[in-house]
Image (tube, rainbow, N blue to C red; front, top):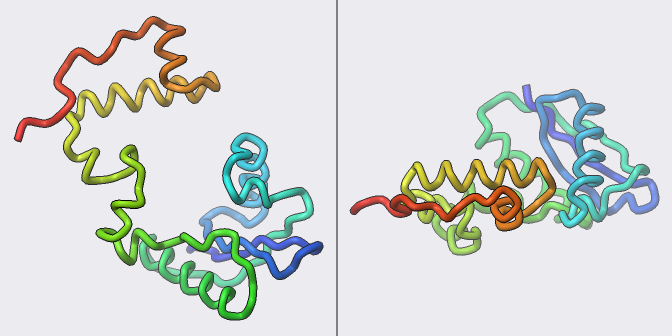
Length: 158
C-alpha cells in the first residue's frame, strides 16, 4: 500500500511538499533529512529543515503510475487552494512523455539512451556509480584511477 503524505513547516504552513512512500512515514521523513544533508542543491533540500513535519494524506492501492497521477492531482488541489507546493513538476513526464522528452537531459532521455550500445551504457553507469561513492564526478574519478576512454562502439548499429 502506498501512503501519500505532505511535508509542512509550522513557520510557513502554506508551503508544502507532497510525496508518496511504501515506507513508514517516520522512515520517509528520515530519508528526506538525509537527502537534504547530502544533496543540498535539490530544491526540496533547500526548503527542508528540522522543523518539517510529515502528515499522512491518504492510502493508495494501485500501480506506481496511478499513484504518481494521484499524487499530482493532490498537488494541483493544494495549488488551487492557495498553497505553494515545492514539487510542482511532478508527473509531467507520465502525462505527456513526448512533450517532456525535450525537457529531459540527455542522460535521462529514453530516446537518447536507446541509441547507445549497452556495453557503453554499462561502462558509463559503472564509472558514475563508483565516482559518486567517492564524492567525485566521473571525469575526476577516471583521472584518479587512470581509466582510459571507452574504446568500443558507443552507438548501436542501425
